[in-house]
Length: 81
Image (tube, rainbow, N blue to C red; front, top):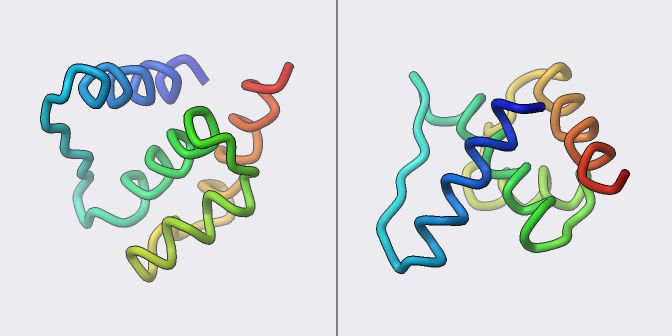
């Protein structure tokens, strides 16, 4: 959770400072989508399910595995505890 939280905070800080920010992994869909969905969970107050749907709508194929979906769900629980 600490690494996800660090990435989400990094993204938010850049956005708050009107600075450009890019999130990318090897293919740009698995880990990238996971981090972006976690950002949506924390800063747009979306549920894990809704954040996954939103990311996949914008970039089909994003969040490639059940373990990535689980990470988003666990991050949601982490944020709401």
